[in-house]
Image: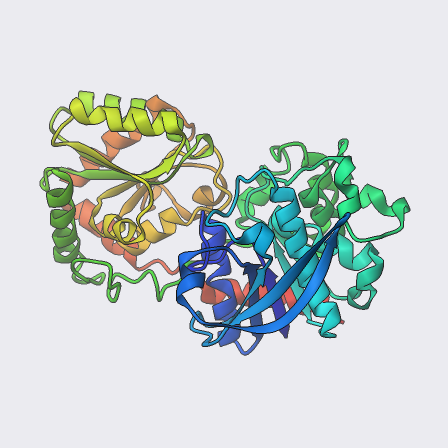
Length: 471
């Protein structure tokens, strides 16, 4: 099968969150099963795009209402990522370093989708599957079914994966003229509650809908930022498939970003060496349990509570624990976290920003990972932590519920039911007790390193979905 993955993100080309990791891994594993999976992303002014060689495979123009934009399709020459990578370069819209949060994001991502479909039509391509990821590509299923320009693609099966249903790409009816010409009787496929809603349109028009965990599929039936009824109506074509992780990138035995590599047999010495390096770098006590948070400092991750969570934990356990935070996001949260340095010097530190190498080091050197998420459709951080022998402390929600079972129930993590300062600190107390029960602690760490969350099984599930759609 020839499968196009169309996405706003793809690691290492452009990354904000877990969407990039999925799109950067799943196609590679599909290709290992003998298929032709390709990835198409916008041509951002990114480090990867500037440092690698691309060749022009197509040039054209797209119309966005009364505006004409030239576009170029560029192909990465070496297939070094394990799949064919294509960039849609639209200089006036994407020659910027950032991915999101521009005032013209509607125009940017709509033009990206139009240019992609124009390229398929103008080069007479008929792929077997178009796999769309989140709202940034959500109008493709509608356009190939209803827009006159794309009639040759009308029978191409489309799959929508919802990575986060809270973001839907809404824009006003006044921008309807941006969409290539179609019979206005079909405008209902675009509209939801008075606005054009790309995610809602994709839910209506895609042949199959997947979410990134089974529990998240259940959760969005009652919490989907206004799409609950629609998702309930389309449940018959929906299923949850838990994400995997790229076990070539995330492998403590071979990871070049670590100070010391290790396996499930040598994890005690290996993790200790990485912990020693971290503690030296961030002025922490290597003999104390090391708790960490890695990710975006936003409300859905529970990050707004982190300053109080850390303050309470450090005050209740004076000099007995370490906390290291890696992340960026809400400025108020960043400032509050940075402000704790003065009060808990020697047991607390932060790195505001994102650093891929440091993230790998922290997964390897930390003892516990905090994930007090309010919303976590799948979550990859807990899977990385497990892979590196770090015990996740999670709220039971979405993919966290599907992947982490409390050690008190015969599992290997620490779980709580609410995103609250009390619940998280109670879990931290349990973690401290576990840390000093060395036999149990080492038993759990060895167990988690042997859990298989690779993409192999996940890729097979997606292949089954694709094959079910092809006549």
